Image 1 (cartoon, rainbow, N blue to C red):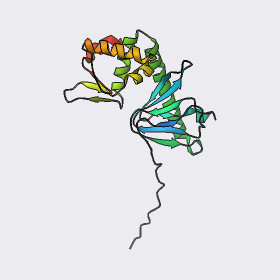
Image 2: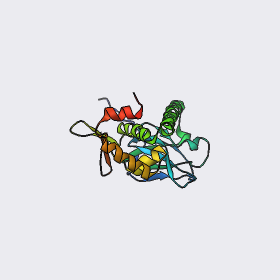
Image 3: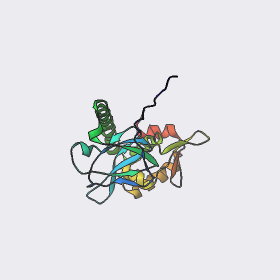
Image 4: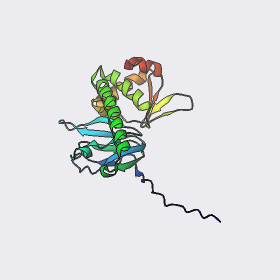
Length: 206
């Protein structure tokens, strides 16, 4: 008779759940680890000198963030969950060569995305920037598709304002105009992209 010995398995790291609206950490907090987002959507927020929140970047599944830990610096942004999310802490002392390469590639990809998003925030009139931002969010965890095939975005006017460097009042006015022009159908915390082709033309994206 041959006996088979089962070797104990190293337990996989447990994902940490985060509920929509929760803050993972605040600017100024200690930075003991990196994180990898497994599911959901997060945003990094910075408080401006005028006292308004500005969305610096969105963190999507697969992204590694919390790079202050690499420099021994305190957190530079507040991280807020836009949806229910799951993330995994990555402690520097446990990272091998492959993991460090994964960190490098992730941060590089995010840098490229931030540079593109920065242009989107600063370039063009506000209505154009809103159109770009909504199309961007439609491809994230905040987006979805109605039964009739129209895409939608679960977003408040405040979130759109913080993502486009505008005021809530200005965004609300333009959302109303875009509704009247047949581009959007607003509902509570939800915007349906009623005419996505026209919205894309408005955004300058091709």
